[in-house]
Image 1 (cartoon, rainbow, N blue to C red):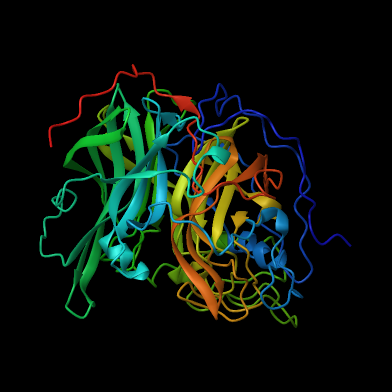
Image 2 (cartoon, rainbow, N blue to C red):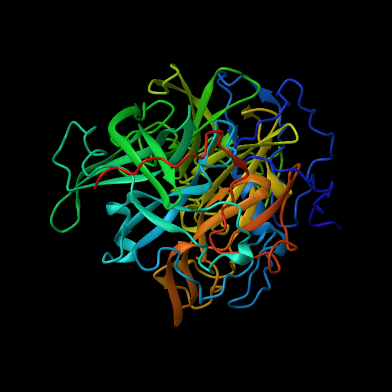
Length: 550
C-alpha cells in the first residue's frame, strides 16, 4: 500500500525569480488551471489532507483559504516514528542541512542580528545601489542577553560591495554594519500613551522609489511593564511606514530622514484580533508588493490573528478540514462524533486548540504615497493549527502565487507538530484556495527536528533533540529560490552555542506544489554565510554622493 505521495519533479526552470513577488507577464486570469490530480492519499493512522483547488479569487473577495488541521497533521504523518534520539525524523528533501557550530559572526561582535530583509523594488527584485548590496536587520546591543533582545530591538542596516563571488568574500559574508536607521525616539512618537516602559521596532520590508527614496514598512510595538517585567497592560503593535533617503560613495552607504512616522494599520477586531481581545496578539511583519494581475494597486501581507476574543473563537469544521467519514479526523468540541457508536470513532479536538488562531492578512493602499491603507479579509487562516504565521511573503513563479511564512514548533496547536521553518502554499492568485505544498503538509523548509521527542527551548534544548532543531529561523525567500535566515541555537543540551548572526544561505527548488532543498547548491546544500546577492541594479548614476559634514 502506498503510504506517502511521491513528490512530482517537473524540472527546474533556470531563471531568476523575485523573492516574495516576481515581475511576470503571467496574470491570475492567464495562469494555468490546477492540474487534475488524484487526491493525496491518507497515510495509515492519519487523516487525508483537505482538498484545495488553487482557484484564484478577486483580492477584494471575502474568501479566505484555510491551512486546516487535516493538512497540518500530514507533518507528523511524514515523520519517521523510529528515528532515534538526536536524529532528524523529517524527510531530508524538506530539511535544511545542519549548520556547523563554529559559525562566524557577521557583525564582528557589534550587535545581535536576527530578522533580516533586503532592499527591494515593487516586484521584489533585489537591486544593488551604486555598487553596494544593502540589507536591513533587527539588531540589539550585545550587552543584552540574547533572549532579552526582542523588547529592545532596533532597525539597523548592513552593506557590502556588489558582484563579488561568495568564495572571494570573508567567511562571515563581508558585511559592514552601517548603524541604526531611525533617529532615537522616532518610532515611539506614534503612540498616544507615552507611558510605555519599552518601545521596539520589529520586522517589515523596505522599498526603493524614484532615485534614492526609501520607504520602510515595519512594526512598532510599545510595552507597558512594571519594574519586575510584568505587563501592566497589553503591548500595542502597529504597522508603520517611514520615508528616508539612501546615499553611497566609494567608502560605503548611509541614510537620512526617517523621522516622520506614518501609522498605517492597527487591528480592527473583526478580521484581525486586537490587543484587548488577546493580550498576546500577533500583528506585525508588513510586506508590500505590486500584483501584475492588478496593475496600479499596491498590496500588503502581514501576520495577524483571527478576530474575536481569545478562547471564545471556536474551531469550526472548515478549520478542521477533514473529508467526510474520515475516522482519523476530529470533531469540533461538543459535536456528535461522525463515528458515534463505532469503536475508535473520531475524537473531539484537543482542549485549547482554539487558542491558536494565526492568519496571513491582506491590505491595499489607498494613495500613491502608501500612507493610507484599508484591510481586506485574510488570504490564509491557520485557526486551530498555529498561533504564528510570521513574516509572510508573496512569491510568483511560473504563473503560480506562493505564500511563504514561518512558524515555530512551540506555537502549533495541541495535536499538531512540525519543525521550525518555512511553510508554503500555492494558488493561482494573491487570493486563492491555497494548497499546502509537499504532500499537503505545508512544510517547505524545516530545521532538522525529531518529532518523537519534546521540543525544549533555544536556551535549554531537550536532551533527545537533534542539535539543529533551533539552528535557523526567520527565513526570507529571495530570487532564484535562495533562502536566508538567522542562527538561534546550535547543539545538544550539554553543548550548544547561541547565535545572533545570519545563517548560511540555502536554495530551494520551487516546482508547482513541490518545494525541495537543492543539495547541489553550495556544500551539499549549505551555501556561504549571509550570502544575500542583488539580482539587479538600481538605475541611478554611480556618481558618489557628498558625505554629510560630521
